[in-house]
Image 1: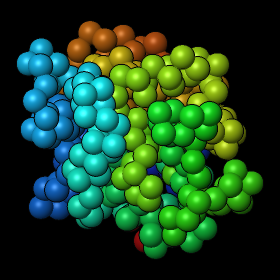
Image 2: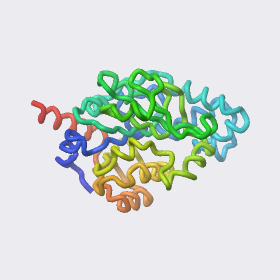
Image 3: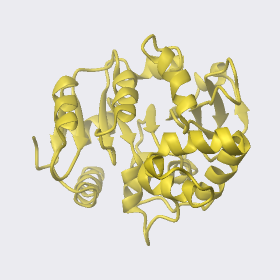
Length: 281
């Protein structure tokens, strides 16, 4: 466990050998507070405020979304998700610093908001790839979009200097969401053999480490996605995880050789942005 910022993180980010992997906790850094749900539990509460859901699944996001999908149609799930994440999110200082790194081949963002896209808008030659729901895009696991939000191809993505990967989809630009049980069952059936992962992501992760920010690993889905995205990458990774770890989190960190940095995201943001500014001076 580390309680300070390892020099190799700033150096790796600057060199493009460390890949940022962002979770919903990043929204805690948004100036003035997040205008969109900032955790699976909060999102579940938003969805279940729209439709009466059995009490025992009310706090379980994927099960609540599946109930709504079964009884109110998939279009209702998409509409409720889009309403929840439609507000434009002001990127935090950490979002902006990561997006401005001169060498940033890949950035993973495992939540539905648009803060990372907003931070990347001033960057040239970037685009994104998002996970797609099989209920809406049967046979297609991913969709590519250029920096302006227009549909793009895998061939075009090979020429982008920065690729944003949204494995569970996102509100922008096309309202793609992996959120219900059935969404995840389809993906998890194939993820062990890497079918749902973009080829470009597989290429860019090779030999690189991951830096997890705003992620918790107390949920099996989060661990599974992280494990599969990290596969065949470097054997050196880091996670900013303040406070007490659950047994599953501790086991996952040990299993994946992830060094824990025990500091708040706010302190990490200050330490990293200060270090990067000092090195640039």
